[in-house]
Image (cartoon, rainbow, N blue to C red; front, side, top):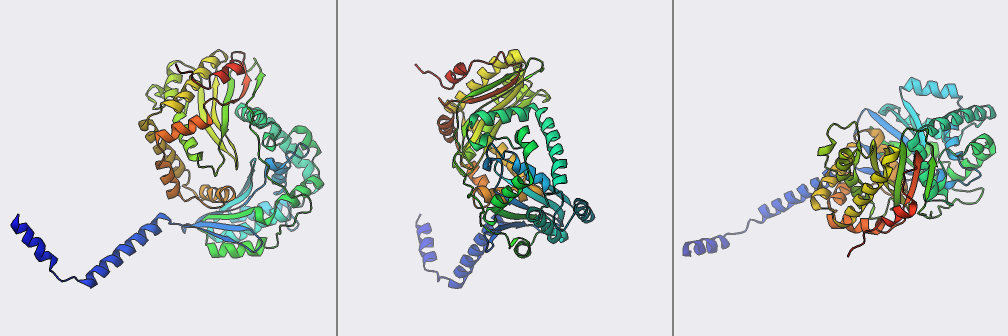
Length: 475
């Protein structure tokens, strides 16, 4: 013991090498900085142009790139008279502009070997192109042209009217789409979120050039646009291209300024009984959280805990999800999937399943039992598995430039910034079983659900019975 004390005292008397200490501190600082940089490689760079357009890129130097224009406009900004105009406008954008005919537009894209696409959702309209990185300037110029200078000729409108009506027939044959449209219609009845994206047939038959022009002038505004790029995209170059091609867009509204009004959720049901269909399609949902709500990720974990299953899976009895095991063992359904659909200020959280008509009541019973278990007794082990699965699925979906570009554009419109993958992963990893139970109790326990069912639904329990099973009576 004495020898140890002497050694300690002698070490304390050694002269301090200040240069060595400084070098070590500098090295540790460099290492910390390198670690910080590695978390953000490739970084998402954002620049706001003078007219309010935001330009965001994630550049990893690949030979291909995806560039697109995200617009904060969708069916939620429509009313009963013009419902369907946003989707109609998306179709018309590819039918020629003031400087290109439809055939010229198609030939230019084909000569580049690029892909040009678009889609409309309830809150956003998107135009994007996947191309070689060297062709990004041309791709953005084409995209800018079609959103600013769409020709909107009468003959093209009439031709596209028929295309959209045929598209509606295809959607009506997809019963999952039909059920979710019904679910929105009753969950958000009396509000714009009840609108379908394609709109009613009567509106499609009557939409005119003036309707399309009015919508274009009132919604395609600079402050509501994000230009996003991912892959082989230089941020500074894209900023210059956006300034050159979209710099003339303004924020002057010729009519009333569109305002995003909050949408009210209503617990209710809709049943479309059709005994000629072989299977029943049912959706059961409660009101969830919006994109920027702190509960959103916990609701995603809870949705992952419910999971998904169908009969094609080889070994459902060994599935880690309770509901999947019960569904397989008792043959309750042909398939089911949980969902967590988010909008800016609200959402729908629930389950959609397909089953034989006589099995609906048993499936509903087991679904609601699982709902209550999530509120009261979900375990840490289950939550850890769900977190790992959610993290993996989230990151695996970001393995292409198109997926990353979509993520960047959507998040800037919804959050006002890009949520980097490492931050998202950290937030998911911080969720505990207690968090899941608390959030489920907040959104699910003793709440009025929205129910939509299509097919042979005679065996679907009465709404009051479904509502009474949204809580457990404890003695």
